[in-house]
Length: 186
Image (tube, rainbow, N blue to C red):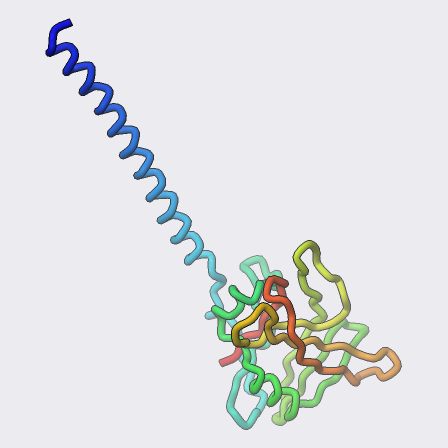
């Protein structure tokens, strides 16, 4: 073999190696860009939410229903996703609790919140998703804004079957990995 043939053989191997690396890198870059774009575009749009003025002193408007996907199903989100939406603070929840009348309609699996001006928003019994399964409890759950830590602020509305129409409104801490519904505020 002369030196030219050896050089050609060497170059051919290097070209194939370089092309293989370039194609692999282009694939990785495309995958990462596509994943990022898909994640950004997958965020559920909340522009269509209908907000209700309950007549609260702060002027806070509450969404008439839970955030739902395009199929109309309630969205269950872990806290890190839920906090990307305009969810209520503890103060906004306490104002709702203080100034509104709460009426349980347990035969309809609903608790109505009647504002000072007479307008109503309803909280359907939703349950939540733990790390392994949906908890089908007949209660209301939703996320509230929280500070750092694994446990995040949530609302849990319970009732006593012996006292129809009189729900228990509870603030509690829930594991941030659980998936709870959210109610938007403006």
